[in-house]
Image (cartoon, rainbow, N blue to C red; front, top):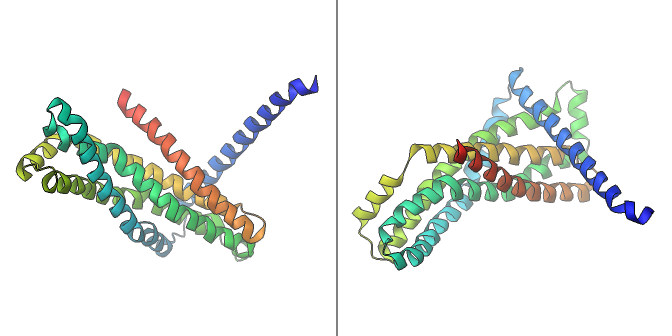
Length: 261
């Protein structure tokens, strides 16, 4: 009889554990956001985090966007040439980049680069008792460590996505003109005709959500890390994995929301 109930026991424990973590993460996020409504405001830390998340992530995001736009142009030409619809390639590239690939690829790159770094930084402070020291100095560690990173994540990712959109479209343009023999004027015309402000705004909204998730998970895993250097490593790994999964999940949810709207 016990053997029959074991799967349900493990399933129940898994569901309860997931709900516990979701609730703890939600409360942690609310505490972090509430810190932005109270003084003091640590503007210097916000600027430092903006530079780290935004400016220092530019090279990897830029390279990813350029090659993604180039690949989309090649693949679209391969498929559309069978139906003599090559002129639609510019529109396909700009819509794919602005609505989906720009935000998602930028989010995944930043999650791998910055999410792990945030978890490692705060995790190292946790295991060396620096966070407890902040509390003894009458400084709210959530407001000091978490709130600036949440604000920076929300602001930096849309900036990166704007750059990714521009460079992704440029990558498609270079391949279409230099390799596929398209007329530059015609390609730019079809690209401009297919560019809609709604698509760009949806992509920027996704970017802000992704930036918030990356910063939140990095702070949460680092803040709750235990077990010395090994625990810090686990926190960094968990941040990258969870951020990547949530980026893809929220990308679908937001796409479905605006698709049905």
